Length: 457
Image 1: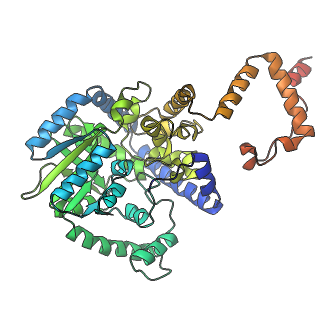
Image 2 (image 1 turned 120 degrees about the vertical axis):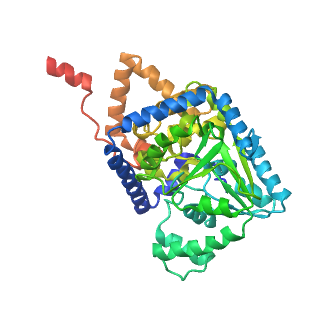
């Protein structure tokens, strides 16, 4: 279900054709951001928690190899089988081989953005293995044959009436039913059969504790627990950056995660997976997929501190009004715009420019990633590498030359005022992206410099 190769601006134009949806999407996410603010303001030590979490993550990233080996050793001592995957291809092959080894052709999966990043569902489908996503939002977008548009709220772009139509088509609800209680109960009954009949379950990992070799999964629906506890094989897919040193550190992150994500005081289920039950196999796949490369980039390694709360998306004015699918990557929004170019600079060169650099994302990040600074730095790297639009690059160079010369600046100002006054059609047309969504200003009679000199005369 990989998005066709349209750039962010073109995909945002598609989303913006439905103005009512854009307004609703914007207001809904801002409501979640407002809930986050109310809860965080009630905690006097909120900034101390953020600082502590950021320092813990900094420490882990500085000793990542040591903590990975410690986690592997302790997990194996617990009876967990540990696998290492250099990239998405290896991760998908490991999952597929584990399932085929046991003759399994149907699997239940809880939410895992890593598997979305690796396009696991498509890979397994191509190999004859059916995957059912058990998170409600993920199941909705799976039925709609779409990718999640948000890392915490996967179907935030869908209205309840549209979900009702999807359930009518795929799950047999009556036509026109959009009552959330009926839709939720329908999904519950549908997924209950899935949980009971699937012999393999895959979960993501929110936090992995090096000290104990255990994995912690946070959900609001309990679907990760249902899948993992009923299955004969539990596979956990984990990015190598998910480590924290000790169990004592977990409380810091749990207090930050859900408040930042959805404005809740705590996640409904924080499930610890340490040992397989008798007769069960438990596997964890430690996945790199570009993370080591990002760790080696001094300007961008802090992005690996991300705990996937989605707060930067909820506050970002560009994301809220362009939709998650406009980012054409599994992880969208500001943090996705930092992570994606690390995987493929050319393919995702447009994403760091999908930002106002207002800094709101950095202000709400629970682990204090300097997101807007990294977006700006990515722009510089992309220009140097030659992956930006050549016309824009030439325009910026021309602007730099003009702004560096007072004479050229004054001349350009006069030419601009003359054009806006006597030939506005050369600027006010559909070829000017700025004109499409704005009313162009009335041309001033004089420049600021001319006004200032006249005033002081």
